[in-house]
Length: 275
Image (tube, rainbow, N blue to C red; front, side):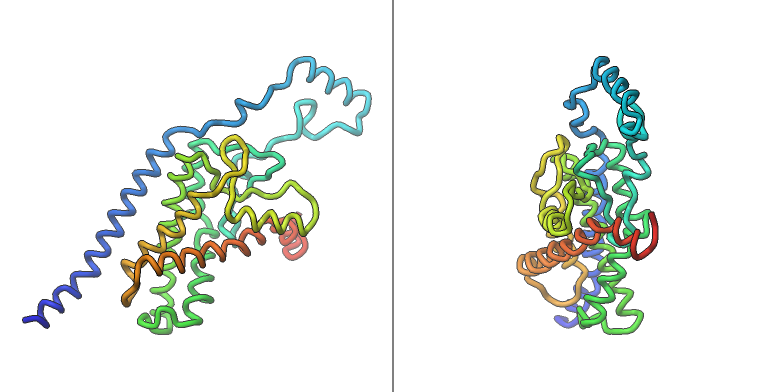
């Protein structure tokens, strides 16, 4: 009888775990919808607007020195379109906002960015494909999933699910805390300064006023997704230990990803020969 009860419990556990994951995903999706219902406090409203005298003065200066005119005319340089502002890097899965010309996300942009970064872009899947192959398949982790295509398929599904949960946790929390989910690129010159900036902004982001703040939504998302992933991983884990160890590992992996994102313009120009 005990063996039958044990068999029944074992066969029931995957269904129970799947139900828990599905319920958690639904709750987080509801939170996303609720959190994106309101736009964050815009720093644009706090930016002094140019007076008519300033515009006239700028126009006079441009007329007296035609070489100083910018593409955008006397109103200033042309601002990037929404498509450019929300372009997802196909390798890192990140979107960049420049610190030198920062503009906070609206609620509508946050919603679009959530779908693009987690589902509707090549970058949403490149990371899971790469990490499942290099970190998991190459080391046969977890060993219970075996090798070959079937083992890799399970590892890829696990990495993809964790990434979606991480993004689904991050998005509403970032909206509530007025944190930016994009990578904030450096406004400084020089490789060393930009590299240091990329490391620091693996832990920081901008708030809606354009000020540096601890990236709680992103960091918390890594730990939350790691904890939830224990519901489908084979074997027995100490949830607290596994969450801390692997969540911290994920945060550490974010450093080289941010370095690549920071120097992506140089990569596309020199390696891919794009301007």
